Length: 238
Length: 264
Image 1: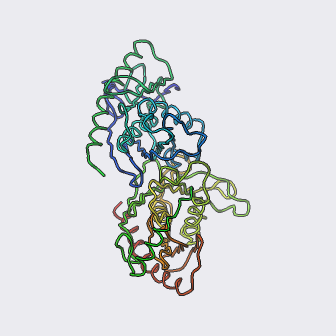
Image 2: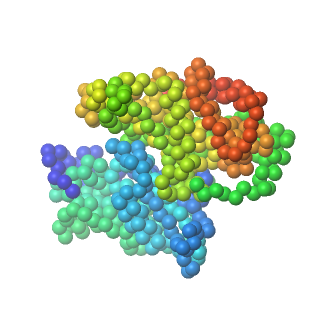
Image 3: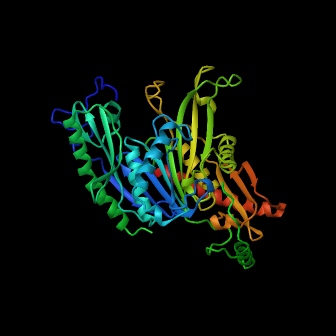
């Protein structure tokens, strides 16, 4: 979280650079069945972000050494395509993508009924084709829809969204400039039916009041995003 | 890539169909699946395209970097083309370093574009001996239902033809300018299925088929790259036949690129 120099993040009316109010989300649209060869898939456009998630399985678990006798293994990969960022991203795993893959897996394992498929594997592939800000939230949300589209039993879908702080004002769903110059970022993974959490990270600087505000923004946003997810699944596409 | 078991039944079925000059999805021998091309689909890339051939879906994105020219070619920039088929694209694609299959994909597409001479590498020079543009074409598969080669080649050349050199962002010029791509090399791929070559093999035909041949042709029908892949034997008569087919199909696909470019 760097300083913002002379970049103006909020105008005199308290509106953000892209014209949003502090509590507003970027435009979100979701489509299912975008990877025809997968067992389930979804794509999300979220601001300029564009992510695709594909689910394969439940299938035989290879290599055998990672097999679990009592439940399925969830194999989650988050990756950014080389052309997804302003400067080209070198292909292959890096420390950041490994960490995002892990926390995404931890979140999804909390809702997928893995016990129903002992000795199996379910593969979840998240590909960021165009990145703006908040790609881990976009990826986790896309993966939830893809799992539901694949018919994998879950207690609930995970809705992931981040709020943060710019110019001492707490705002929901940071865009690229706000993320670069902002002072805090609080991404959460929320179960919309119960309000419980399965994913939580934070970096930056928030007072207890600001933290509460960011938390509440995420909770409200989750309800709105959940509706879009459900609509996409009802779409009846494939 | 995990090598899937090829059921004898599938091979027998494909051979039986071939005897009656049929294909399992009802296409004729030289018929392609529905092919769609969209350009300018990835805002972070300096040039981009999405191609769908049946259930095969790929993206291509162009990025630019500033490089030091090679000592023996101080006045030239460079072109790099790489293909990635990540496990998102199908149950048999595995994570990890690029597989031989995806390296072959990238290199065959690269040769077709490079050898056609469509990129003026001298035009990419910024300061002779010091700075030049490197064009990086990344090919990315989302869904593999066969014939990734043609999908990659089509998306690749369409993305290149619409690429903009980001001179302002690199503080090299006052204005961005289009990348000069003077030709449209097009690839056509043929696979032997049930004992005879067919055009645009889908996933099933690839699985139950034998050798494949990739032909890249330039604007004037000149051959720019050839590749024979997988185990199999073919005759010169077979090759002449598919070469003739490629000449006419390449023209149609080139027309598709031109139309997408005009519309975009």
